[in-house]
Length: 317
Length: 167
Image 1: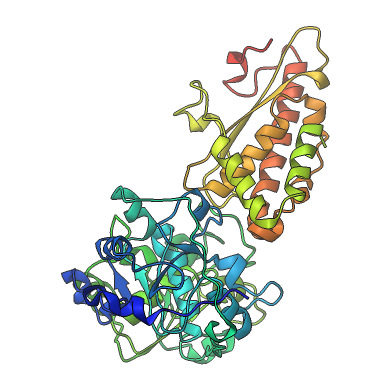
Image 2: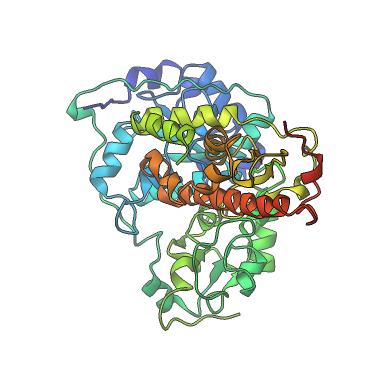
């Protein structure tokens, strides 16, 4: 079986670049509630140059995209692919993989429980945020996003490669431990949302989807919701409002102006975010939880493809 | 299924899942760019909305004298951005397999041909729907344009039909 253990030697060889260390090079990131959840392209490039990244080391970089082939066209050196559909979803039940399959996915990428995982991807990190959120369901302690994702890395002319790093083989004892998935704190199901009605809900889809004029994302395939509209009481805050032009997250003050001042949300409230299948709302979940420090945000991954088809649930237009 | 497309399907089926992704990447890399008459004129192409990324295509049907409508040549043109390699790969397969075939061969391609590449397990069935949609639009445009060119007095169905020179 393919398995590795993060080498303690690697982790202590260069104290200035300790994998677990927070990226403190950027004032914008330092201002967020949980700056340890985000890294800059500069920071990541320095880690790669120092040889501190790759399967079996202290930092594993994962690419998670909408397009399943984008990784193969070229990726950040030493990174591996984690596909939202092929890897993270159960092939039969509409649910995520279980503890055993998750452990296999991590082990096959040279990740151990104490590895710092940096995720990046296309579409302003939608799918990267989704992968981060799923890893959080399994309680992986240190998983971060690359601010700006794939597009920023490419725009800066940084190195891309088609070389897939090999994963060093290890013994069974080096395998990622079976870690129970704990959905309740950050994942909402339909019944949870029904019980939540009247409390803050954030609909992160496009305005047309929110109003019910569109049953799917503009320019995206129809994914079969029979009714359009939104969950009663949901505020419309399209996910992209949290992103700057270059795909990075907006500074904390600008995010607070949107979510706190304009929308009246409060970090101590229970909030549920949703979209169409839970990927765009993972982005907003990340913003509220890790950038603004909300204590209790849940992502409703059933989202409109469930709510818009469910029998006898209320909707608003 | 036209032999050229069937051969590609066999290549995919005979490959391991990881090789299939590499093969799809090769088709993505090799998708020809739009010729000059279409470059910058996406309004002359049809968008395939079922694809997750912007994909535009247009079909040209030949009008060679003395050739039966069913035997006229079909040419295919696609446009998809480099950041959508899966969509480009689907387009590349259809281009390699159907470009230059006859009207009869294109129209005879089964609608479920995209399912014969063993791609569902490597790209997910959801994503494969884009390829099914591409094929159905290729066949629809081929049928429409073939009918139009078979009727000499009928106006060309698109502005491009007259500019195509076929030997």
